[in-house]
Amino acid sequence: MAYVGRVIVTTIHQPSSRMFPMFDKLILLSEGHPLYFGLAKDALDYFASQHFIPLLPMNPADFLIDLATGLTFDMTVPPELKQKTFMSSSSPVTKANTLQESETVATSLQEANVATYPSIDSSPDSSNEENQRQLVLKLLRSKYRNELEPRVKEKLQTGDVIAPELKTAISVKKWWTSSWFEQFFILSRRNCKERRKDYLNVLRFAQGVSVALLLGMLWWRPNLDTEQDIRDQVGLLFYMCIFWCTFSMWSTMMVFPLEKNYLAKERAADMYRLSAYFVSSTICDLLAELVHPTMFVPLVYFMAGLKSDFSTFIFTLLSVYLIAITAQAFGEFFGALTLNIKRVGIISAMIMLIFLLAGGYYVKNIPVFMNWIRYLSIVYYGFRLLERVQYSPDQTYNCKALEGCLRFEDSPIFKDMSLEGGFRDALALMVMIVVYKVLAYVCLRRV
Image (cartoon, rainbow, N blue to C red):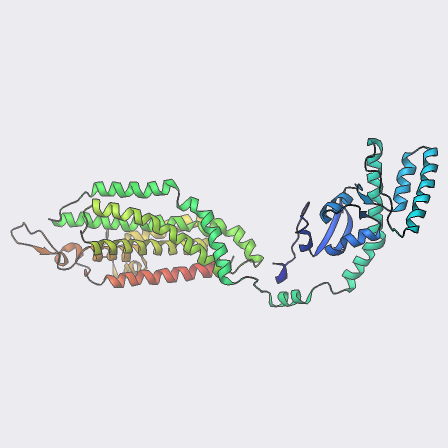
């Protein structure tokens, strides 16, 4: 982020010796007062020019924290600070002796070409410790105000403080430091980790399995001997369709409204491409949505005695997958459109009710001026797809009656549709998926 023109401000207490060189600039504060501001690599040189030099090898951060708290153990200090400290804490005789000793030590250091000064006593008594600390802080604040602060102000006012590469990044406004696939994989791990507790929790599994068992027991292996038997089984297919429409829609409809706040913050900081976030979110939701139908369909299919043909079972499972994915796309679209939990619940419930009524089970003869609604309904295409997968035109029933066997296609239940052409319904659902996904992405661009 720093390479794309973003200013990264980090408050850190004690960085490691490996982390410290990573900081470009450093401001050292002590009780709200600045002691240093400038390049982090120049901090030690600045304090060395003030005669604050560590006597032992240590982490630069530890050294700076000691200075910020006024502790000068294991480091040299300026001679004026040493004299002030001892002059304020010793008797007159001790002061005279100390001054004489200091002069002798200074003379010997000069003869040895050693440019260091004695540190303050590393074990001061409790009465002098606070005084020594305040003297150190007072000196450091004074040095900053008198020496460093004027140079900093002059540089900020007249100098070019923006690096050329940052100017370029700011001018183009976007300079991604990671590829689309890197962003996608990172966001996928985050989204799947955050949502797996919601999608793969015990209650959702219990809901799917319990509904499947209940449907299997209510429609337990009926014989398709009469038209009423067929109507009952068609009712099962219709319920399967509306169950997976609502189940998948409600599980994804709240995603974008709940993630709106941090998505807006991360988008404002240009942390990643919106397309990478959207695709990763869709795939994480998709994987979760496919788990539950895989457990649901086999239980219902064999308990309810649906067509005992393996290919028909596979196509039924795929049809339920397609219905669930379409409902997921629908939920994402309305979630991105409203970005409000209350409004998305009210609007989606109303629209889902319309789709349910126009699905072709409750009302078959819809007036012409309302007929267009069914072509927008997920339930309409999903229900017809399940019927066409389950039944074939040459399938017969009512063979025990006197009039002989009747073809399914001639039944009044299927009078308004042909039992052939399931591919058109599947294609219509696929088109809905693409349209809803594109609309959801466009709506998210407002965030």
